Image 1: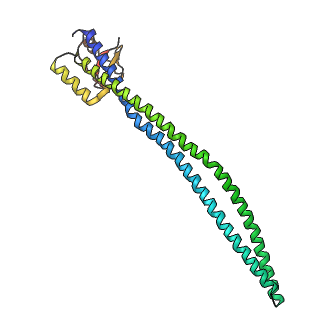
Image 2: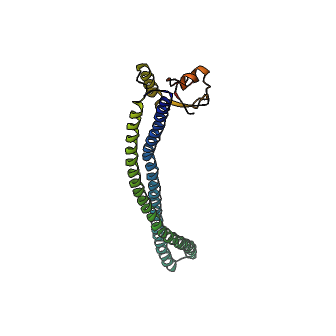
Length: 238
């Protein structure tokens, strides 16, 4: 195929298809990153559940330790009361009375702490189902999103393969001259999907460099032209 309109339309179509293919490829490559972010949400929920379970375990252990201390203190009080009743001197009697009073105060404190601990245990037990539901919901959402993403990726891969085939078909319509094909292949290899640019008015739309009158004339005549500033293959937009 020849002529300025044909050359411009071919390069314009090649550029459109290459940008479209790049967008498809970028979306395909984003999918694993998006899934990883969704997986992180599951991990966050699982960590929250584990922390909740660990806190419940800690509260129960602390409560049991305080109950053990309470029992031991109560036994000590009983022992000292017996010793007090059997005391043979006022000094011993008074000393045991002081120890008993101190231990009773300790018992009161432990009972208060145990009551507080039991309240916290009940509150923490009540939180666990919500944390478990959070993990379940995150996993279900991930499974649904993963399926959706896989289906979408398959469609994108098919669309990408179609676009790549269309690119090859369009590129086959470029001028057959070996020098032109060589230049085109080199800039495509070097700049990939950013290797082409349209000319609006007299300016390259990629780097905004103004073309000379001769360059503009050559481009309008259908000659293969590269921007002297950015090195892209040019085509007329208007």
